[in-house]
Image (cartoon, rainbow over all chains, first blue to last red; front, side, top):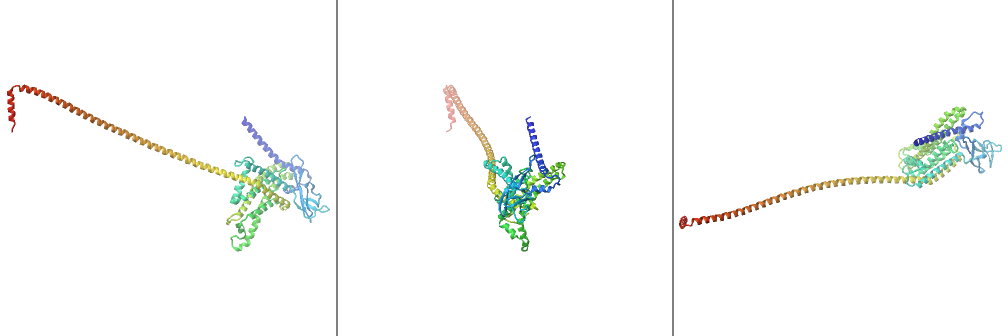
Length: 360
Length: 163
């Protein structure tokens, strides 16, 4: 009897989890439809705007939760213009409406521009936008989550010295050990400990933002790691780390490779381009993978609105579930690849005896 | 095109945030975590090595015990064999001694017997001699009761004596 009870409870739990998942997959559709319902029904639906609005950045964080009226969390707008720094809330900004600060500002396609007296965009005046946008806010959210996770994990390491890991600690430890044993050590070798902090931070930063990006509702649903600015910053840091840790063999390989002298005209520029192209490939790879995933998922959802029929939704949802599963894999895979290639490039830069091997 | 144009704001914030994030995590998370993992790995390795050493020691002790036992058994066998030999020797010697003693005693007895026999014979001889003498005396006395006979004998004896 007891055993049956346990069995039943397990089934109950399983069915609850299933229900939760079904509800989760249904949420983006519902949220999406709520947003669309507000729009003019006569206009033919254009998925491009919706998709690009999602994968791009925004000055306020639009929140769509089922059964709740969609609202926007205002975020600080920080602008640097010829009249100095200006800070105001994004709730003051609306499409096609002029905000009067030190300058007059208008929001055109999510970009802040300076307007002249008539309310038109004044292209002659430049504005540098350092706003805390949705992506910045979500990045900080991801960082806070990682701080909480690793704060607790590192405190449990301090508390449980020499003991087996437990709870969250035992969940994170294999990932940390994976980065160390399968990413850092095989690629960098004995000097890996100096780069462990960078590799682990990169891995978990990309991973958490990839995963949060997959969550369709509020705290997630952004496209941070699929934003070229973010991948550019990450790969620029990687570029600096690679070249600052490059030893004499690395530089010798670039400037005086062991080839006939006349080939130098070709090889030295190629190697110099290689310095840039390696991190550049990292930047493009992460950006393209994550953005593509988001675009596919959103396009599949958009099918419902393109056909303007609820009958399409089962097919859409099935495909979205499929894509989300793949995206889950991609989230891990891209974090792994970015970290792995960073480790590989660092390894090539710090290698003591440079043989005839070339970059992949 | 807008998609692949990095915005300066996001670049700025990402770089700043990531560097701070890297610094804080590096100091407060990765360092203690990796340190603890390394330490634990070293201690586990040490423990394994110690266990291996203990196992070897154990095996060594066992084999030593076995060899000791074997030696002891061999020694016991040798001792037993020796004891058996000794016993056989002692028994043999005892037998020999007994035989010798017996032979000696028999010899002694024989000698005694011979002696007694000789004594007895001597005694008998004496008695026979004395008896014979008595008889001879009596015979002679009877014979030589008459003087003529005595003279005859003397004469005869004298004849026999050749000078």
